Length: 324
Image (cartoon, rainbow, N blue to C red; front, top):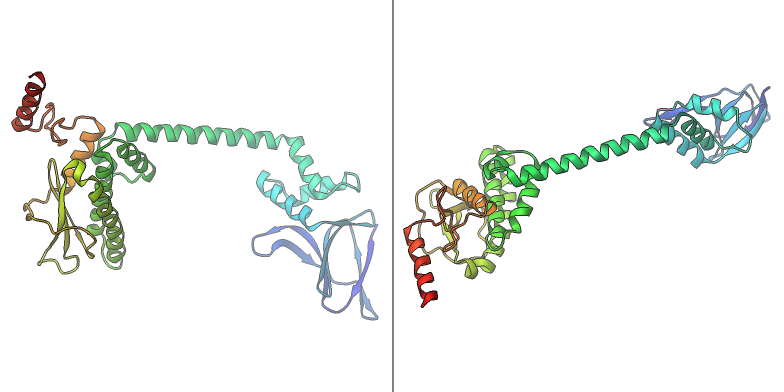
């Protein structure tokens, strides 16, 4: 049984909806009128889902057994979303809708198919499995961040593990915050040295931001930790002539920068050693493994408690003074 539809001739069309479309949202087949009389288009429509536009007024409806039932636009698009999520075709949804009461919407048909096939329960099981996998992945990353050497974290490419490692490092007061800031500065410095072409400017801009934050942190810890630091100039470097020097317990580290930020003049000179990376990573390892020198906070040699004989003598003097 056909349903007869008459609409005005001006700026109008009737299309059967076949399913979703990537570009136009709806996959449609535009229908030709059976005849046109007195500026009216006449259509004979079989069972299906249709869209009619008349003078800019768009509406959706379902035809079943020669009768037309209006359909809300939200129900149509929500049913398409459910079909995409659970792998249902629009033809399957339409066929199910044809067997339901006329008061049922096409969205009800999609939900009925999902319930009958148990797709929602299966989706919940999949989501639960994914949640457990992510939880296990986070656990592995936390374990890796807690047990790995600093060099492995530095050379690795897992940003999540690096964030976990630096978060744990920052909690190791008082040296943890400065060690984490130095790690970030050295990481950005290494990247800036490796890049070429247009990426160099972006890398040095990122490095400058990290060094700026480091300069804001140093004055807060300078007194407590006894850190010496300041700015110098490298006459042989034209692109990044400004140099930030920092005296750590295990040696001097330095960073070239295109900009000079707040800070005093460095009273000393470069020690002539390209050892900033190794010293920073050694400091981070010592802090994470709780094996800093109890006297100066430096990095003692492997298997030793104190950095050198001077630190050992100072601790002995402290103990002797306490006894007296």
